[in-house]
Image (cartoon, rainbow, N blue to C red):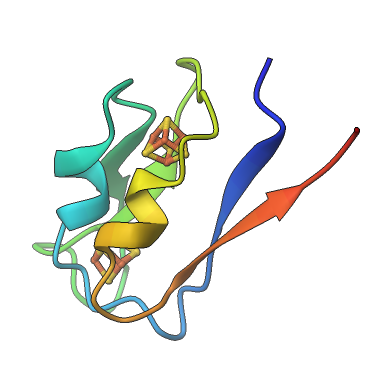
Length: 72
Ligand code: SF4
Ligand code: SF4
């Protein structure tokens, strides 16, 4: 089980899709519709497994993803 999960700051997100492209588990998808700009959705966490690898946060050019740690 993952010891960290990504938290997305939508104020910072520029919708570049890098997080979704780089996620090895397809946990992030560009499917969260922005009512103000429906053609360009935000990333969102899905039901698939997240292994807590942090790749999404590493690839984000806007520092919009923070890995939240929990447990030991
Ligand atoms: S931490 Fe890894 S598995 Fe989880 S969403 Fe980010 S890239 Fe995907
Ligand atoms: S990589 Fe960062 S800026 Fe790009 S879509 Fe993901 S969270 Fe938004």
